[in-house]
Image 1 (cartoon, rainbow, N blue to C red):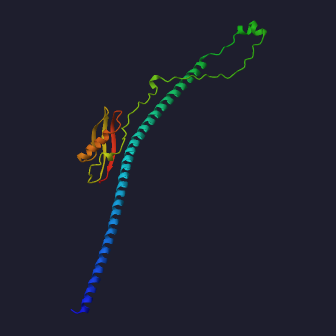
Image 2: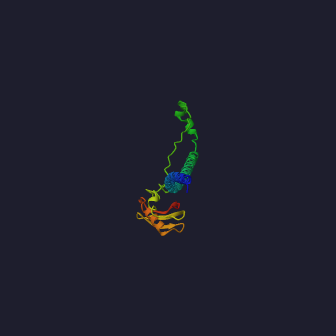
Length: 239
């Protein structure tokens, strides 16, 4: 090989080496940029997951509050209806009794016969000596009597009716270690007896682990009074 060919060969090798070094540097820079993008995407996904989890807890809490408010509203409607019926009954009884008493007093006044002057009254000295004093007619005021209601019709005060227990925390704490493979939407029905949750039923089939978590959640409620027919709607999204 001539000297000229040797120089060309060495130059080609150097050019190829420089290109390889440049490609390696470009590839390393590309990998670093891709890693930064992937890392940023993972951080964004974690933030989105946290927001979704918080919104899910808020939705569960709102569902519970809606159910409780619905029960309280129905109870208030029932009490208002009873109060209105009692007031109407007392009103009708009172004025019916008043009308009857006024009618009896009017009949008694009509039954009293008027005084008729006789001949002895006309010839008596008292009538001849002086004319009788002039009577001034004044309207007769009828005193209204206060009628006390009969004890049989006296309104009975409403008894204090117990309400379903209120949750003190969210369900998320109790299902944190449960892997949900699908969404669950159901209603838990239960009774409160002797400060304990009894007769727990569900409107759909659930895994045993989820049932245990829900029952532990119910046991955390503030149980002060016995109550039957309590309902708790729950909606869970798969993780």
